[in-house]
Length: 292
Image (cartoon, rainbow, N blue to C red; front, side, top):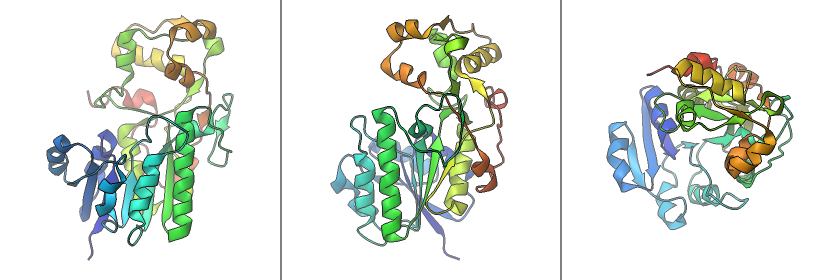
């Protein structure tokens, strides 16, 4: 039986978790721009390939190497167009295109929903250049899929957390004493444990519908301040101070403010019914202390 071949682009924390959840019989290649990471990728079970999404000529060897691609790398840090996805797709188009691409996007493509429930049929309305780059990537991938007959699964991902994810647990923010909004100003936020995201990626590679978007989030229904209060109580740390939105404008960074300007509750019905994911951590209270 032919081995399934997979190219992971952006094999960081989530990519390494994907490697752990893949069943036997996969041949996995992982693109990295850092020679220092090649030994770690080999130990994790992948064949490392040196290349840089910001340097198109370094990607020429990717064409035809794998029948599935998992794109976990973020866009570059500026502009409204995602040049990195453009460079990757140009390289993949040089030979037989992969049969399926899974792209990890962001739930930020929906913009602000005023706390309403949001499913994948909602029109995209990004409010930041960071989210506009993701919309551009999604559009590029769909066009590529239509042109070459490649199935494209878009995973729209909110805040990723895990105890063992570097910089990806609320205890770091709590330790810094970063404030949250007063309840009357607060926004709804969404989450997914890094292990559940990795498992969703594997399922999307195997059974993701062509040209289909899926929200990848857990069942938690919390405002941002309540989430950090819960994390503080579980970790034995002080709850964060509460401030007004007006105070936030003068004390928080532009990036922090952007996350406090969008309120939505994501529906995960497709995640459960189409991908068939049974969440290991359905609520943040189940996952915040897992793996300590």
